[in-house]
Length: 253
Image 1 (cartoon, rainbow, N blue to C red):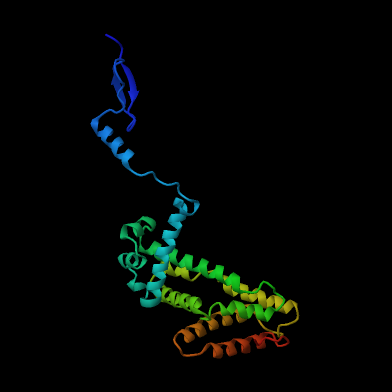
Image 2 (image 1 turned 45 degrees about the vertical axis):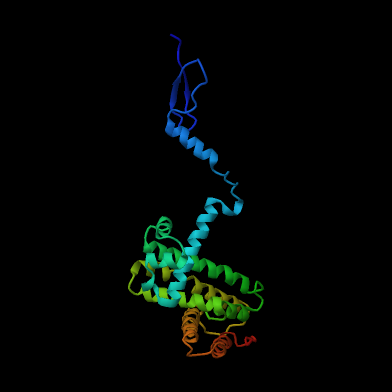
């Protein structure tokens, strides 16, 4: 009896025992043969362009879901942002939302971080790179917390929703209310730069002034959202405080 020759199935790789006589078998079973036939009938899969690589697709999906959270937060508050409601708003399946985010809290935190990144990116395009006009630079930074346009107004409403939620959610508060207060430190550093240039009124504490400016402009921005004040009125208030800090500089504009 002749030795049998063994080869692998072209579908599953399983060993196939076959005789030297006749054409060797290509598949280990009719099931694998049928799968091979169906695969040949399918149209070829086009090459994946760079813009549609898995990592990019995932990033776009996560961004799309985060934007849905922002819209719900701005229009209805975060209490309305259930996982199912977010999926519907994003136009994706609930399963996809759960695939990208382990739970609702993780999703809310990640959406907040993405919004911070987006605001930072846009702010860098609007804040002048020339730091020669120190009061003007500070005015531009403070303006990022006012509803100067539709994007900033929308972001302010989203942040207000997160602030309300942070009052009863300690974990979210840790993310929303950063202990290091980077904005206050930035404003204080700018005031100190003005002091070194001889522009700041004597006796002022840069840290206290920064705390007042940041908290004040945030509250004033919410007043504009609620139509309690106009942007023009808020600009007058900001310029009043900047003129008090930088009495020798021209700060109106």
